[in-house]
Amino acid sequence: MSGRSTWHASLQLDYTLASKRSVARYLHQGPLRILQSLYPEGDAVCHNVLVHPPSGLVGGDTLDMQVTVASGAHGLVTTPGATRFYRSEAGLATQQVHARVETGARLEWLPLEAIAYNQCDALNHAVFDLAPGAEMMAWDITAFGLPAADLPYVQGRFRQHLEIPGVWLERGTLNAEDTRLMDSPLGLAGQRCMATLVFAAGSALADERIERALACARDGLEASELRLTAGATSPHQQVIVLRALAPVTEPAMHLLRKVWAAWRQEMWGLQGTYPRLWHV
Image (cartoon, rainbow, N blue to C red; front, side, top):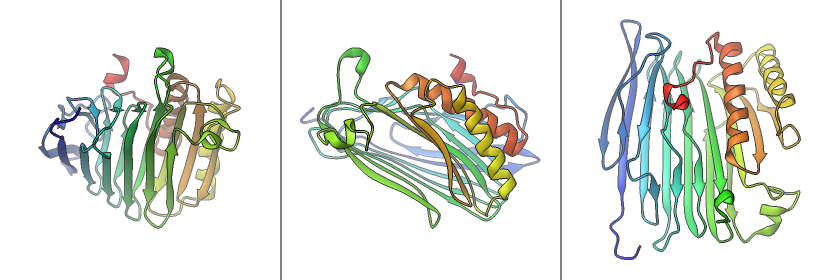
């Protein structure tokens, strides 16, 4: 890919509440778009699809997303396909999102998986800033290589940064040549998909809500083929986390969708209404 111009794309996405309707407005630069707002569950929740037409990143590419959710608004964001971090010959490829969720607002950040191709050099950086009384659900799913196509992840680096400032931080580098991390029981144990689903709040959650959310997650785990490589915990009074390791993306995605729907019902009294795109 030498001689290729790099992509620098940015998006500012703002949700507000107007006449009891959550409304999305956005500005973009470069190949990053928000499709038409959809309301499959009424005016209170605005569903949006985030599209990156090139569909993949190489060294030097940057996707920068800034999201705000004003008080009382509720936004749900997903993507039509995986984000692909391709082999890099020109340094770091970066995908970053910073979201600010105000008091009484809700955000659901539900992109499809990121795929780390062999010889990639990638950074996936997400920060969610929650005001007191704000709540959110977000997931992150990363697949390493393409096992079904016999294209394993044997070289490259994938850096991960997931943060709720002052509350929760997960950060690490997954180097394909670090066999202790990638293949031993101390790390990924040979699995090639890792998935995290987070429910978080800007204020401390009541113990009863945490216990009910954990019970929902564990019910989902018990019925899952990943029950031996997944678990749910509450590492902080404002955070509940489900984690899973899987050989490929599909069982991890199935588990996260199931628990996400259960948490939606239990924590917010909302149906687990799948974004329309997930049915395609």
